[in-house]
Image (cartoon, rainbow, N blue to C red; front, side, top):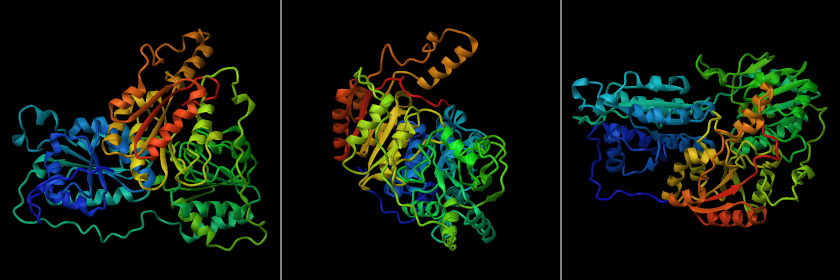
Length: 581
């Protein structure tokens, strides 16, 4: 990655300004990057990050929008499990960032967000601009969907607040934290060196493990079950945790259900994997749950929504979700009738269970088999050279077959049957909040985290997602971050076309009008040209199936050589079943 090194730095071993001390604390927190869109409200901190801290630890990532800055930090956290810092400008920048913060909150990722405000002392405010960029209790804008926030009133309090925010965001369940820094504190000259918090002392485990009684209870339930099913939801990207999840399922012969909304949790080719993952519970998985005698949920999203399919099975849930529930956000999904709730990190429960003696009556471990990759005849369209989503999936798999990849994002129309994972970084899941516009920024952040990993970062985005958040890709081009973005471009907000179709059918109204207010056409945006304007290699538009592999292979080759690349692929919106949200 390209770095921007400052020149002629003064020799200042001790902080001379309030913002210097803040930069010194950030440097002690093991923060690799700070994504930002610059603003005058934190001009003091900006200067300190460059001219006092030397633009290292954290290094600045210039973004073209606060929403992109937060999305980049979100993508980084999904790969690394670690927080990135983000700086947003005053109340206006925080409002820009709010949707991306909601995504990060729903996705339970760590992130340290720094905001700023004009002087709280009204006598110190500049005319006009400081007044409209100053708000009382600025954190209230995002408090319902952040984990912790503060607006400290002194330099020393600000230093302690930054250390506390970093600690809180890393503690499971993770979510963004926010610290609002008064510009007057940033620009306050220090008369003596402040006391910096000793951030290196903290060795607290970031996720609590289960208590002995809970492990005993789950162990006994598994030992007595004959038809157990594991629901694998939000779990870690650690390969060792992945191997333990596989080992636990094999030990008990448990069938495993996975979810497209979250990252890879279990190998899809494994014979215990119950079937293709989906955004909503597939009918086959519902039947499996109805036949189960024990269901173990490992932080499954919307567990109450699948309990109805569980029949008479005992239900055990392992999650830390209760710590983040509040009255504003309804992502607790309602009440679930449980036989046991284990308040612990799911992967730590899995490890604890494997430490117990395996039941002697269990069959030997299951041997993995290769996944079937053939497409159903119904998916093939020999009478047309148009590109369907299944064609894109097939050709992308072929084009990337030369090395490991990471599917950062997939569009709604992507079938679970076309997702093949055998490693926790093969697929990263959705954005948490199920909005639109987050994909480009998250792709950049994840690609940055994957740099030098040997794994090709690939994001398959819808055209609506790309157009709403696409300027985030400039950051990838500017910092020379290898990345392949493939746009599944159907020239519609097609999810909502289907909704309009259903509403029209229910009301007896003409379905042929469903496209009005949905078509991204006339004029049709030149997405490859847009990418080139941002400094990426733009390929396409590709409209014929016969040209698809060659275009994707060109993109793969360029991205593996270190380029940021976008391939615009025109896909048919029909011809597959989409689960609408």
